[in-house]
Length: 72
Image 1 (cartoon, one colour):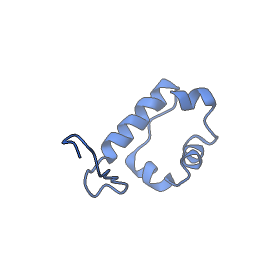
Image 2 (tube, helix red, strand yellow):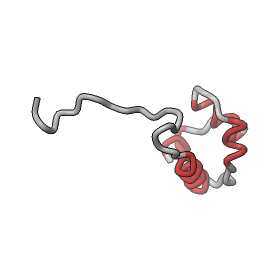
Image 3 (tube, helix red, strand yellow):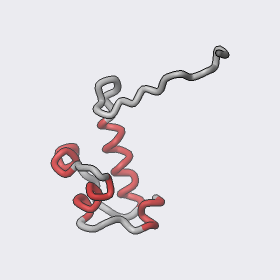
Image 4 (cartoon, helix red, strand yellow):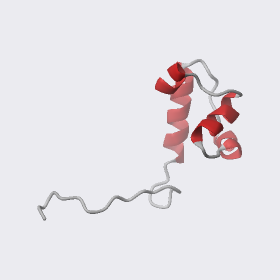
């Protein structure tokens, strides 16, 4: 194996290695600004979060995002 060979990928799904919720909220709100939606709070995010992710955005927006909104 070469010295640049990657053998593992660490997926931190629940924030145990990196507390990234502030970045998630910031990115969500930046995207929402681009499509004219109001920002969300951490509390609202936690209240509405679910999978699959399109269902989560449907709960946030009151409808499914359009293809154009997903692209943003």
